[in-house]
Length: 446
Image (cartoon, rainbow, N blue to C red; front, side):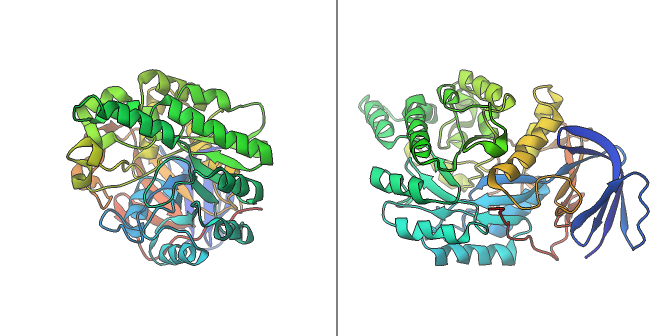
């Protein structure tokens, strides 16, 4: 493994930007200071004019392996992730077969160990029938990011709508519970009402079917279970103004028992974009009316929403085209999430330090990720060098997802990801990959 000295770089970390040198030795941050003179061999990196950020930790991704590898694989999507400055990811259980047993879960970790350029963790899946097996995750709480509960419909039988099952999971889980919150009964009622109109449904109907009420009622239910049992609950991809009243900002993040996530596409798109993008931005929960986006921005900036993620969910273009009701829900984002937020830094909507907080620090704090998410001496050297003054455009040739499309195609960001280090390994630099080293399994401080 090479050691690196990144010289004269603007380090963005823990609410401050300061110019310094950073020394990487044996995969970790050895020293941060000025005019460092290491006594061992290093490869020098000129950081002048660049910013150094802790690597992004994306707490919600769908990399489709095993079973759905025509859409994506852990290798292809992790490769796209590191090109976008994402050094660690946590991946969902709705693969084929779903991760409903500890053996199936460990098989995913084996795939990650053999093919992921980024660090990785995988959620244990839950259903109405696998409660005993899901709760065995308690025995592995230092090695698994959490258990995932779909409280709205998903693929296969991942929907958990039995209140006795939910009550036991919230009562007995010692690991973080992450939820997808949409009320299935409300969704079905809305869908049948629109079908009764006798017209073909279109993408613009999606936020009417998966409306604000469906999201609020389900989020409220999850929070009530969590409060009843003092569970550690993390609610994924909030989308509505109404839901924001359910979350607070009075406690330090490390003391919160209930935390919340916002995804980049819900900060960027609104229902007005269905007119041009159609099914390409069909996702669950739905992208909604503009007043919701404004409420989400406000809640993210005042810390009611704790982390920013992607819910990266690639499908082939063929699966996204055709009639609305047959089009798959989800969109690929992990390669461009950091760049999209850097766009909003340039727009003056969010400080750069806040982007780092929400995409790195806060994720590490929420999930108790061990020795990652911050630029600190002794921590793993998961680092991203960005040039805030070098624009980059999303082009077909530059899209690295296996599905080979992006809802952001043609968009020009004001910045470029120059280099990405994972565990001190320069895995990506100026468009070139070094695949001689795989990422590591994330560990958690319980």
